[in-house]
Length: 334
Image (cartoon, rainbow, N blue to C red):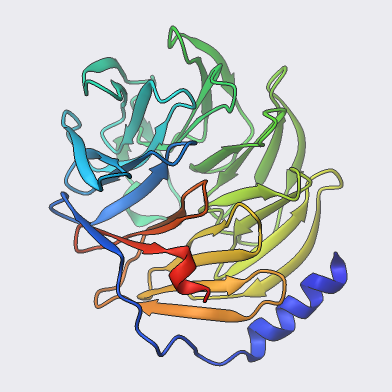
């Protein structure tokens, strides 16, 4: 394992810019007016949810590539979205301090929740939070078994809700800054949360108590993913990718990728990795060798998110132009 990642870091450092062959998107989805911030596929890859600066959450049918619903109601931009494992709900979290739960099939608003406290005073490294501001919802995640719904916010807290009644059952303390990302392991036994430029915390989901803390100097923690049967964690650091051993709490490797990195994800077979960054680029890598296979450069900067469908067929990119670009993975790895 360590030898593989040693080879990866060397290749990342010396690999040339590749991907001169332009591969046009397989589909271009239009439905947002402004920059798209977050994407999330359903577990069965049938649906895609997107949220952005226009305050809308849009649900897409991935068989027809058509809009199913445009979900309106938030009064500020959408930070994150998620789809429940049973495809019953679409969740949206916003800078307006609320999260909303929508019926996936009808588009009906089922729950509208604004966790307290709404107002707080925060001083930190992010200028927009250096004032009295609303308690923005910055992270969302349904547990794989559908029992829990985790909500992270800019007041540094994580709140756990029962995903059937949407009653608050736990409030988790431990982070020293805004919670930017939450993910559950595939077996649901653990949950990891990441604070902006701060620590990662691994939680036991049976009792929602911290198991261990993963720390690096000035990390980013914008997104992460469990892999290798939940033994390891891949996360976005500060302009780099980090690989952690979950059981030991050790940082195995860090290696540089794009500047202003926003998102990272592996294909289901863990052969390929995608990364996107605010500096225009989306990249596809061979995860085993570290070879850069393909690069897309967007006309405008600030690519906020990229996702691979759970069935491994599609790569989706959120753009500042308000479009979602869809490629077939098979076209990129020929």
